[in-house]
Structure formats: structure tokens, C-alpha cells
Image (cartoon, rainbow, N blue to C red; front, top):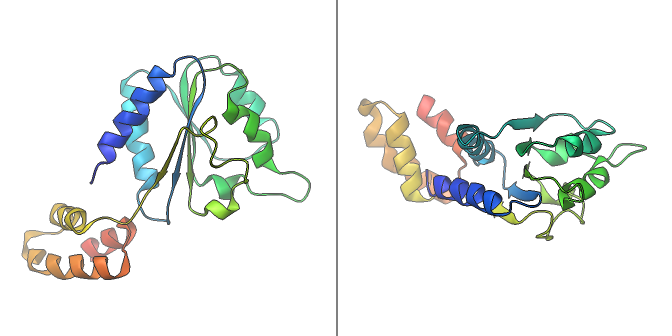
Length: 185
């Protein structure tokens, strides 16, 4: 919905053009807004284009070195980065990732990082085009996107309620998770 497909294509095209170094994309926004879905669409397209996709689900000492050692062009996904790579008592895993995201290893990887709460990211991680070329802030769907989503998801017998959902979604800034729950009910 919206222009997500355009953004996916722009990210992948830019990554391919930046063929001599790592390339990062930060996706931020409230939970349920569509960041993970965006990543899924991007990953599916990347796989079609012949790139393997690596999903990092744990902050383990040495993970940055391991990822850096991957010589093949690939997509590396860190979903909900601020939760997975949060400060620990004796270790800040985000600090270990800075050099990796900088591209010091000379590789050609596309790093996709999603984040619900930017305040929990290292201040050195954001606002650095060398680390994250794009920072895409995902926002609540427009009224047109809400209507399109609901028309796709609800049975025809409930189409008369779509206008009310569009109005409610606009009034409170409703993410896709809420819309999915309403459409299901």
C-alpha cells in the first residue's frame, strides 16, 4: 500500500549502484506501521535478484566480525535493532556494529535496520549517511491507503463500514496492525 514498492526499488537500485561499499537503510516508526512488511517485500525482491538474505536475531559478541567475514554480496536484516542490540551490563553491542555499518571491511552488503524507538539507538548510529544512506520514517497510512487496505481485506458484506474505519484511522493515526485486527473482526 502506498509507495512502498517504489521505495523498495529505490533502495535496491541504489545498493546496486553503490557497488564498492556497504550500504545501509534505517526504517523507523511506531510498531505495527509496516516496517517488517517493507523488509519482507525488499527481501523477496532481493532473493529474486539473486542476493542471499541474512536475518540477525541475536546480539552475540563477535557477530559484527562474522558478518564482516561474509565475502558474498548479500542483504543483512536487523529487525527491531534497538531491542536485539540493547545495552547490556558489561557490553554495548551497538558500538560493535558501528564499524560494520561504516563499511570498513570493504564488503558490499545491504544493511536493513528497523527501529521502533530511535531514542534507544546509539547517537552515533543515526544522521550519518555513510552508515545509513537512507532513513525512511514509516508513517500511518493515508485515508486512501486505509480505504484500499480495508477493501482488500474485508468481505463485501462489510464494505459499508469502510468509511467509518477510514474516519477513525485518520482521527487516531492507526497503524496497519490495528487495521488488520479490525478487518479480521
